[in-house]
Length: 177
Image (cartoon, rainbow, N blue to C red; front, side, top):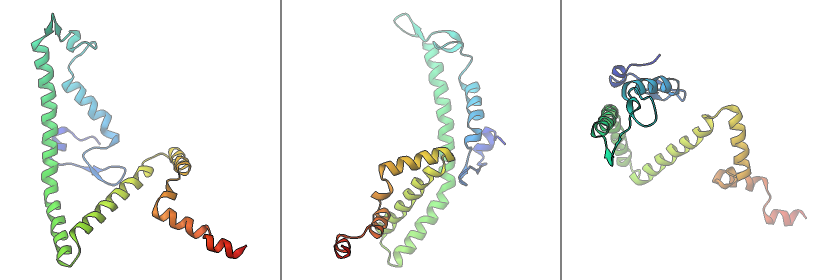
C-alpha cells in the first residue's frame, strides 16, 4: 500500500523489512520517485532544459528558466524540511524519556560518559551486524568470503580470544614437545 503525501505528513508509517518504523521503504521508493518526477520535473523533452529549451541565452542564462529551476528545488526542499520537522517533533517525547532514564542511571551511580559510550558502541555494533543481514543469501556468502580473506573476525577482541583458545601458547607448545 502506498501512502499519499498527505498521509505521510500526517505521520502514517509502517514497518520496513528490518522491523523499523519508516515513512516508506524500498517497495514504495520507485512509485514515490515517479510522483515526484511528474510533479516537479515538468515536461522535459531533452537534456538541455524544460520543454526541450535551453537555460542558456546568449552570454548568460534565461532568467525565467533559472527562476523555474530554483522555485522547483525550493518547493521540494520545503517539503523535505516539513518532513524532518514532523519527525523531530514526533521524536522529542522519546528523547526526553531517554534523558530521564540516563539521569536515573547517573543518580544510581553510573557514569554518564561510560553509559553514553556503551550505548554508542552497542548502536554501532547493531548497525554493523545489520549490514550483512540486509544482503541476499548469495551476497552474504560473498561477504563472508571477503571477511575471511580480510581476517575481519580475527582482528576483533572476540576473534583474538577464540584464536587464543584454539592455538596453544608458546609455553604449552614447549611443554608438549
